[in-house]
Length: 76
Image 1 (cartoon, rainbow, N blue to C red):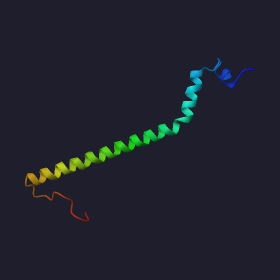
Image 2 (image 1 turned 90 degrees about the vertical axis):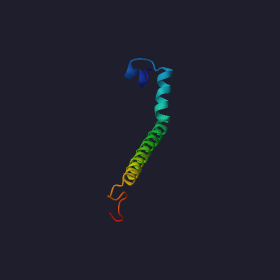
Image 3 (image 1 turned 180 degrees about the vertical axis):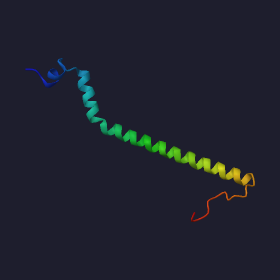
Image 4 (image 1 turned 45 degrees about the vertical axis):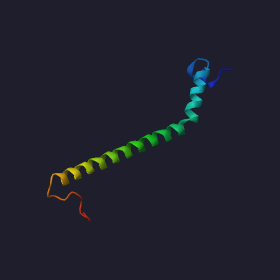
């Protein structure tokens, strides 16, 4: 009797193919979590970089005696 994999692929299923199929099914959630964690880390790095750029801008404005306000005014 011919199995579904044999019917579709025209060959016998291999152990490697079976393990890859299990890996895809069982670890899909873990990969999703890893990707979400990576995206979160990138966003946090971008926020830190933006805060750093703003701090450098403020310090340069204060150090250069720039008459414009270095910090945003409250409510602006």
